Amino acid sequence: MRTLIFGASGLLGRAVMRAFADSNVTGTSFRRQRPGLITVDATSSTAVWRALDQTRPDVVVNCVGERHPDVWANAPAQAYDLNVEAARLTAEAARHHGAHLLHISSDYVFDGIAPPYRPSSRCRPLGFYGRLKLLAEDMVRTVYPEAAILRLPVLYGPVEYAAESSISEITREVSSGRPVELDDVCIRYPTHVDDAAQVCRQLATAQVQGRLVGTVHHWSAAQGFTKYQMGLLIARHLRFPPRHITAGLGDLAGGDQPVDPRLDCTDLRVALSWPPENDRTLTDEVLHVIAPWARTACSCPDGERIYPINVRIGQRRP
Ligand SMILES: NC(=O)c1ccc[n+]([C@@H]2O[C@H](COP(=O)([O-])OP(=O)(O)OC[C@H]3O[C@@H](n4cnc5c(N)ncnc54)[C@H](OP(=O)(O)O)[C@@H]3O)[C@@H](O)[C@H]2O)c1
Image (tube, rainbow, N blue to C red; front, side, top):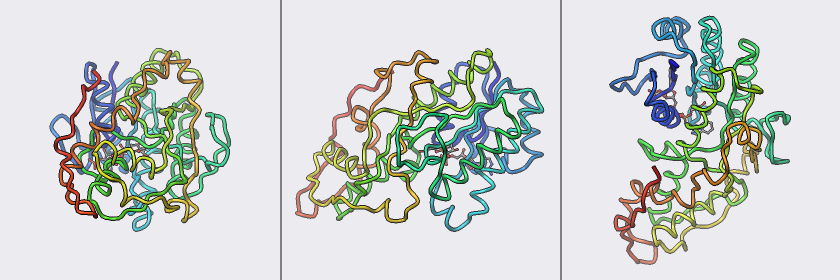
């Protein structure tokens, strides 16, 4: 099976590359040029078609996207191009080349009022990002009805910079010792990026083998947390007194964040024979994820010092 992964330098794309490492896989990047990755501008039809001409994949996994709120606010056209136009171009090229397509979407296509959400549940995004992700899904379905779409919740795992995942960002805030208010209303389901990537591999394999039933799929870890609860969990693992962390309504205030967009992934679990006990949980993985981002921690507001570099890192799961 030949696989082409668009967006292989990103948080999810790197994990998907790891998940396909023992197979014939090619990854693309754009700004982050890395050995082994080809440079492709996914907003250029010519570049996307050339990548498929060169690699002739059986399946394309599209992990290109723009999920940074500052870009949505300051460069909405760029966010549209990456989330919607690039998805359309990739779907067109994949269909023309006879390659299967797995397109990545988000739980933000739901309003979060009546969880859990099944793949067939009505979509009603509240914010700009969710609307773009839904537009992209519609584009992909129009251009390539047989393409598979995988909706994922917030991801965490090995990151290259703190802002790459909200867990590392919260760790940085919590371990700064400065007063921090974290939203305690909106519930998120942090999912390990390597679990999501394994699901991508299994879905892509099922597509190529013609075993896939349905076009929209959901995957999510089961544990839900507010950002405040994540902050407390991180502080506890850093042995950091959490007195400087307060519960707030921050994310809800803008009205563009779903309160509880929990994804029902029963159908996909059954299809992939993936029992819940196979999932990594944030509670188990938190130490691995936070360690690199807690090393600059300094004084607590009350003068106590913490030494997170001494945090004991448990055995990683294989
Ligand atoms: N991260 C999450 O929590 C999360 C949750 C649910 C769904 N998703 C979805 O999953 C997908 C991947 O997200 P991610 O977190 O991995 O994003 P990411 O870390 O920001 O990675 C984005 C990828 O897109 C590439 N890219 C940017 N501009 C490009 C261009 N003009 N042409 C080609 N490639 C370009 C980037 O390459 P360079 O960096 O090399 O420029 C990078 O490989 C997105 O669709 C996102 O909406 C993410």
